[in-house]
Length: 227
Length: 272
Image (tube, rainbow over all chains, first blue to last red; front, side, top):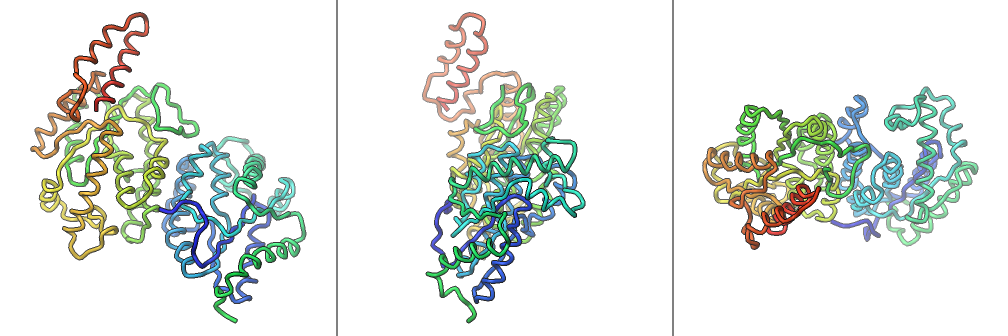
């Protein structure tokens, strides 16, 4: 069993992280389009998307029977399935793998929910270290404005309602995201995250990202599958 | 106060868990569930409320694990974590509440089986230990031990060879007998190693059901009365058994009883 470290696979792994409303999903979508147009074999993998675990997660959320521990372990199971069946084989095959959220999401959320910091990090030590991890840094107020406008309410776990932070889901959501933001901030140096100023115009952020990705792919021209 | 192996979970209140947590461990087909079926009514006749639980029986993850196993596409890490999820759900929603209510919790397997399976499948032992480090330390673990030669006929003439119990994911072969033998031998070695580390009470599971039942009953009776373990069931001990009682009686003052008891179990641990 390999432990969190630089992989030696021919593929490359880029991940985006940040609180809800940081704009990371938009950015990773644009990056995906660009890489595809450039001729790379590019694959996208989303947090909490393993078909194996889907029914269990849905059941746990619907019945509100998840505790911080089972929430954490279930997401780790989901991630493990994607790593074992998806991410690692694709990296071996030479793909460019893009992940919307990665282990840092779990580190932030689980620790805010009260799980032991060291335990969670050790739990995910089977993860592959990304070629680059982009952290979309945004002040809480900006993210909240983006997200709560035109949205018909936040879900129970999304708002951190399981922690009893506040009776009002919207208030609870803000408190929860604020705590997650603090965790992200402390991980920048711990995991050498590449910070992107998520208050800048979308185009500027994307240009910044592409520049970094391009440099990382420079040694990997053979990853191109199309002209 | 009760302890976990290292970490505690959020809102995990370890105070006043007055029940008893008794683990029945052992490999596939050794007769654990048969014994638990006998133990439960026996305990109830004595007035104990019993919760019996076991691997893959959680409300949360039971169905999901079953579905995943039918597909045979489970990765080793994924499988281990799915089982850990099942365990955490039962620990928080069944085991701890039952202990708080004063029940005797009989569990068919515990984290030891989960760890043994993971280690046999090549996962890092320190990783899998960490995953389960929030587990409560049980009051006693009875390890039903059997040699692989005694085990095989039992399995063949009861349930037959099962894909996962034969480690077919590990040792794919057309011959399930060979896979079963290799897999169960590897598992037994892990259990034997853990017997020392986790202070198991070893019970020879090769005799008939009634004999094993009697031995289990004697062991459990001692746990429920808070008595030290019967030396008969111990791993060969190096220290003379008389040393323990000496310590208890020699201690004086208010906290005599408690420190005496702790010292005793400490001694047993060392000699095991």
